[in-house]
Image 1: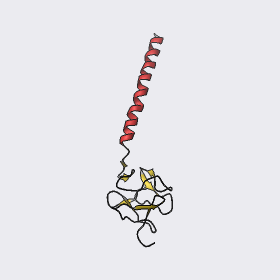
Image 2: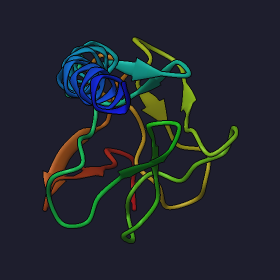
Image 3: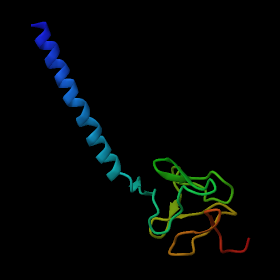
Length: 117
């Protein structure tokens, strides 16, 4: 009797294990566009997390300041959005939006300002 129960328990575990990672993987792939209304991917030409230590996603998938010259966060760790859900800057010396409401990138992948300074 004990051996039958052990075999049944082991069989149940083996069947359950491969099913879990499959479902998990699919969900993560789908939920990778936006989180909390903040940009995470290269949608609409918004800044990405690739070059020169520019905006990196930490708080709810929202860009946060890491390197000088990159946009600063204001609203709950997420930049304020104006056009197309692209981040805009409120801090002095930070880049302003110019191309479709999204900041243009020139210096090491970091958004740059078109205003004087």
